[in-house]
Length: 275
Image (cartoon, rainbow, N blue to C red; front, side, top):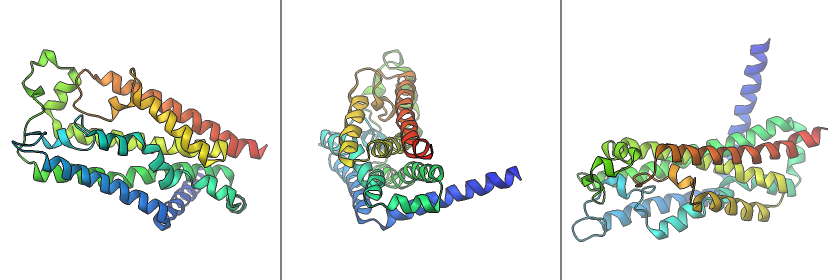
C-alpha cells in the first residue's frame, strides 16, 4: 500500500509538470523568449567565427575558449544574456503564477488538485523546462564553434604558462577543454533552473510580477557582481585565479538563497492557506 501511494503521488506530480510544460509550448511569450535565447546563442557563435583567424581578435582560439560561457564572451553578450537572465526566465515561465492568480485561475486549480501538488508541479516545471530547453541552444552554440573552429588550439597564451603560474582548476580545464566546457554547460543549466525556481518563488511570495522582476534581477546581480563568491565562478570556464572551491562555494551560497525563497513561497502558498 505504501509503495502504491508513493507511485500514485509521483505519477500525479509528473502529470502536473507535463501540464505546466505544455503551457510553455503553447505560450507565444514563452516561445518568443526561447527564440531570443537561441538567437543570442547562435549569434555569439557567428561573432566568434567571424573574429577568428590570423586577422581576428580571437586569433587561433580553441572552440571552447570562444563559446558562450567562456571568459572571452563579448561585453554585449554578457549584458544581453547573462546579466538579464532573470528577466528571460520570468518571461519564459516564472511570471505565470502571478498572472494565473490575478485571473483567479489558481482557485480553479486548487479545486482540482492539492495546493502542495500544485506548488511542487510548478516548481518542478520551473527547473525541468529551463534545464531541458535551454540545453539545446547552449549545445548548438558549442557544436557550431567546434565544427567551424576545429583545429584551433590557443587559450590566449595561457597554455604556454608554467603549470605553477596557473590555478589547479585552470590546469585541469586546459588539459580537458571539451569536457570542461560541457561540465560548465551542465552547471549553467542547473543554476538557471534554480534561478527560475527563485524567480517564481518571489512571484508567489509577493503576488506581483513587477516586484518579482525587480527583486529577482537585483538578487541575481548581487551574486553575479560580487567580488567574493560570485556565481560567475560556477558559470565561466578558463578563468585564471578561480579554484574549484570558489565555484562550489558560490554554487552552495546561491543554492541556500534559492532554498530560502522556495521555502518562503511554500509557506505562503501552501501552509498558510491550509491553516
